[in-house]
Image (cartoon, rainbow, N blue to C red):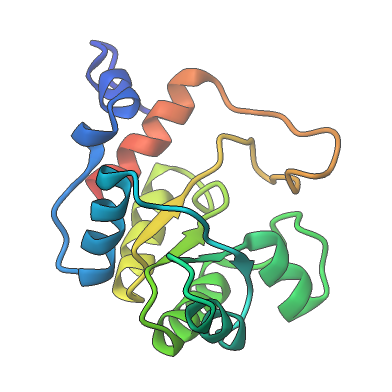
Length: 167
């Protein structure tokens, strides 16, 4: 993966304020306000629209579309990167449409190289997702609960995260 050798990427990744960007997404702005106020308590992992509605009815702060829960609950597969970015984004869109809560989505490893990371972030953003998290594992990834995980180099992780910010 390409990366910035002069340290700019590393400093951007370490400083969350510098990786925040303006987006036309009220849910993302509300989630950022909650983080800034340290007024954030809990976002349950879920995998479908009904879960999101129940989380909202329970008065929770946000909803988290769990990759593990989505892959297992929607497809019956283990979380071994067997579901496409398109399938994950479609599920996120259904969840977003079902709730007023900000939705955070599992973006796995970004579904490929840095160009895929950029595309994935844009697609999740179009779906109305307030935020994503991107893993630092090699591809194909393994579920975080399964032994044998391998992570990419620090430089590759920084390039992946930078691509997400630049999306």
